[in-house]
Image 1 (cartoon, helix red, strand yellow):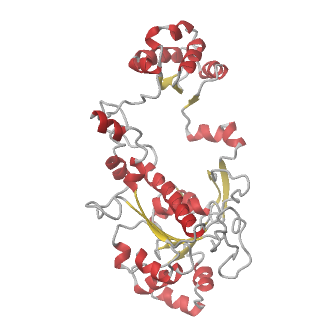
Image 2: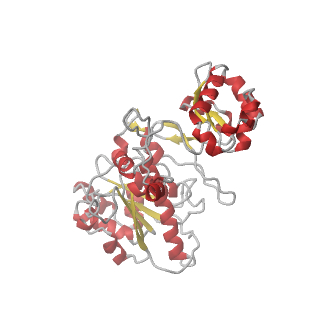
Image 3: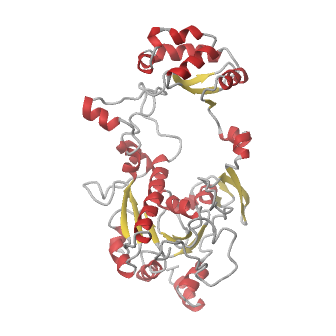
Length: 420
């Protein structure tokens, strides 16, 4: 971004005019990001920026690259996980543990708007790559640091992963059934929520810098706080009433009735009713209109007090009919419902198809790969087609040669020393 707050159009730093289709497109075109992160939270924050046109330079360890490349499933030696979260990026290799590699990163930091990292606090300080060191060479730099417990506090140095953050945030305790141990969500939610917060925080910092004419700044983001922010009323309810929410399976105070109901043909239907009008329409759809006039169910608060018996009635109705009949009745009543979808259901669904929620990305090493598309959708500055995740060190010559001016000989010397 330039000083007026307008995304720049300087193009490829190497001077190479053969730009790929998505470079120079999208609302973040011209924004340059150095991705020092590994695995999920930091790198995915960068992927979200790259999806909308930012030029993201992914720095990987020589030899093996980001550990995400080693996590399956695989097509041959190619990780599908890496293909999703490495998309729209450029890959270079630099050993951050070596002084020569640290010098390269400090120089690269003078060429970018944003640096993202998710090392344990203090790691980059030991390498001379912390915010103070990089801001000294680029005062306009925005740096995002994601860690398990944050940069401060007594637990700052503790190791953490997604599941640790879910447990520490309180969300794991309330997930699952009361007679069984807590259950983690089926995907790495803490990492992805931190990535969302990270991309959002970067854009706030860039707005502060460019639109308001201020300098760069450091962003301290923890995994656990990214999850804790989404814990609804756990904190105020404990504060005011001393109540500690326990696991309730699929019950939720905002839905009465509401649960996952098995159908006569063995599928699972999700229903949630949160107001009087919806409840009345459900009663009529079930052929039990009189329930809506029962004084026991006259308000949502009263229905929540009788949620188990209401769920039992809906469950009996759902078990008596196949999916097609249930969907027809619920659709006619204008109620919110869906089947629980497998990924096979998603691939077959007409709505996913119509909105192109799944996109095919051509990877020159393994062919076409389908993955979630880019969202949200911007009317004036839509994202360009997704570029395939890069091969390891694919862009060393472009970035180290074009951006930093290193000759072929100098790059070979760094390769021989295992610096790149």
